[in-house]
Length: 194
View: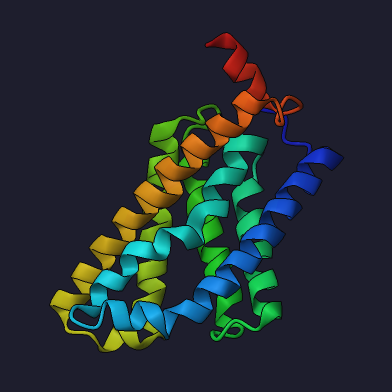
């Protein structure tokens, strides 16, 4: 297991990722009830195909930092930033951040924080999609969908989480490591072994 103690640079990078994605979340929220609603008017559950974007910090941060709590911290702080910018979902945004961060955390905790590969990232993204789907059904208008539409929505969201947040974060982390910008992180040492 990697050392559990966070360094200052770990906190700075996790916080920076959180702020950047918090702004992205807020901007995506502006599109949610406008262009995205219109684009998917024929089949509203398909709108969940873009939701993996909201789960990226829960996967990208642990891939880079490789410490317990990275997913939960980064996703929660990103949700808070989005909320402070004026997310249309208010305090519910915070709880989504906690749930999605916990889901991402589970994927890496399952291996004792020993594996940070594409499989763990894919699983983390899928779990975040599953957790978010459960919350959507309980707390949003998705709960008013027919059972078939809820299943379709969930499938799109889990798939989006696995592909966009999971694999997307994995390949983004690998690309960043190749630039040398992450040389002070364990991901750079893993890159040297390849």
